[in-house]
Length: 176
Image (cartoon, rainbow, N blue to C red; front, side):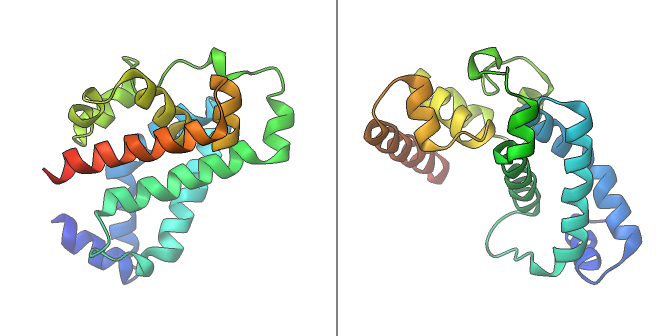
């Protein structure tokens, strides 16, 4: 099936289309979730929740606003970050600090392969080390700007400014 037809059928409630979407995207989405959560069992639960949300909210997907994979990725990222920020998860991870995480954007793991497969690696490569670190913390690890400032030991205003500059640099390179 062509992807556009598959997405249209999913939006119409076609179960076979949903199964095919799951087959196509579940491994990539699980990799993103796991890179944020770092717990297999919790990542699998979130993956289920993400695909339930995709099934229930498929009709809200608007191709004019972005690619389908980006829409799914945002659902997964938001669900993962919501879980990270939940009191229950924080209590279960009390002894885990940011320094124990390996950098997602620069590591040689499966997620990096997925990032490269969707064409992001060339944009990541042009970023400086601080931008990579900041984007990694804010967008992949689920840190708030305040938490990032504390972890990096820099003022909150500096985090906000650098984040804006990094995102603008990415936008400028994606558009060109």
